[in-house]
Structure formats: structure tokens, C-alpha cells
Length: 411
Image (tube, rainbow, N blue to C red; front, side, top):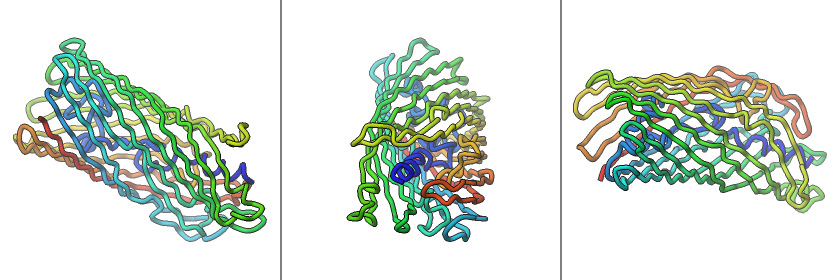
């Protein structure tokens, strides 16, 4: 029972923030890029918030620049046609709203080098079901928080080519709860773990001329070595206490990302852009859980996630000297195979519809606002009975609304 419990909880750690991107990746790191559905984000470099997508673009920003913003993410997810033990009525408001903040700073060192620093939340979401719902053994509450600090350096190799590199330092924390079944009845169980680990970012930006540029960016996977514990106050002091209260460890690898983007100004009014991103979810092929007291494999299960593609096109229209309109359309693959969907991961393909406005108050101060509506394809889960789970079936409908706002200031 101990093995099944820890596996059920930990195997879902990586899949919480799936409502607005395949798997659990949050792209919402720039209020300006949000308005174009992140089309051209790897080549845009319109302000230093784009450095998350391409560190080499920092060479386009002279002097000092500071950008701060956030995206309010309001997902809607409901489950219907539920079959399993417990309450079988429709479940609404499964995924809770959250804010994904971001900040970036850049400083030109000389004509060749520019230093940058970014702080982002690439993962973060809360899902919550009622404790009596039919799939409680497979998930009740899930909360993930990840904060990444990335020092970056950009180098202008030639008049046309810039190179960049970053060192993402990521803090990752997860808390999951479920309701386990035993011979003594039902018990609430919580598991929590945290980790700090490091990856790398490599970027390039090539400018054909003042109006046309392309960019490529690679962010490595980050190998998290999560340390935590499983806890159940219900069973504390009983013979089940040692089973439901113990230290555990698990390795969780965030996926590598490869992005290619293009940006072109047609004339003084219109600009068009496009983006392709490959998220290498195949690194998430299994979850291995180890006991801390006895360093042996406690549990293993295949996940077999697939690499996911993201495609986006966009356009911007310069209304006047102060206002710019942004538009974008995107398609996002699902990383989760149908056979591996869970209540924590009702993942499916989705379409993005985006728009935004830029307001230039003066040469130093600019405001960006973006809005995106994401419509996800209907998804279903069908989990067979196993261990502490009686199995559950359900149909899901998901959508997301996002509002982004950022302020950019040049010194």
C-alpha cells in the first residue's frame, strides 16, 4: 500500500499546470509576446522580456532596461459523465486561477556584450477536486510552484549575428493530496517535496537587415532531485503510521525546449511573425520513487509522454506613434497520450486566440497588455482499478482566459 500511495501522488507532480500549455510548461513570460500568441517570440526582441525566449536578443537593447509584469491565468475545467466510487456528479472549477509574474533586467556592458537577468515562474497551477469525488484516490488537490532565476550574457559577434547564453537556476516545489483506501477505511494523504537545480540556455539571433530577423533558442531539461515526505494525520499513531508517514525521493526532469522564430516588418505600419517550438516531453518516460531509509527502488511506472509541437503566427499594426495593435493565432499539441491521462492531467490539443495593445508613453516608458483565449479539445480519462484506486472514468472540457500586463522602462 505504501508503494502504491507514493507512486500515485508523485507520478502526477509534473502534470499540474497543463491548462494553458502542453504538459505543464507556462509560456506566459512576456506581456508583449502574449498579444501575438508568442508568434515570433524567439526573434522579436522588442523589449528585454523576450530574453526568456532568446537571450541573444539582448544585444538590441542599449543602455539599461527593466521590465516587470504578470499574467492572470483563469482556466475553466469541468468533468462530466463520471463513473467510479464516491460522488459521481459533475465537477466544476477544477483548475484554480493563478498569476504568473515575470521580471527582467538588462545592462549593456560595451558595444559587444550585454548582461541580463530574468526571474520567471515557468510552472505553477492549482487543481482541486472535492474530497468525495469518484477519482479521489487518483488526486484531490495539486499545487506546483517553480521559480527560475536566469543570469544571461549576450554577445554581438558580427553586425548581423548575436549569440546568447543563460544559466537557469530553478526552485521547484510540489504538494499533492489524495484519499487512500485501506482496510481501516478512507484516509487523507498529503505528499510534499522540493528541489533546486540548474540547466542552461543557448541562443542565436540573425538580422538580415533592420526589418527582418530570425532566432533560435534551446533551453535544456533540468534534472530535479526532489526530496519530500508523505504524511497522513488520520493514520498517525496507528499501525499504519509508518506506512503513511515517511521520507521519499524522486527524480523529475523538466523537458528541453527548442524554439525557432521569425520577425519581418512589411512597412512602417505592419509586421508579421511566426514561431515553432518543440517540447521534448519524451524525457518524461517514467517516474522512479525511492525510499530514503532504504535506498532501493520503491516504485516505477511508465508515463511515455510524447514530444509536443507549438505553432504560432501573428501580426502587429502600428496605429500611431504611441499605440500598437497585436494579433496572434496558435496551435498547441498535447503531450499526454490518451491511455495515460489522469484526473491531474486531462490534457488535450488546443487553439490560441490572442490580441494585445502596446502604449508608448514616452521614449523611456512603455506599457504592454495582452489577452488570450484558449479552447481545448474535449478529453476523457479511463483509469482501471489498481491498488488504492477503484478506477474512474470522466469526460473533460477545458478552456483558459489569460490577461497579461507589463511595464518596460529604459534608463
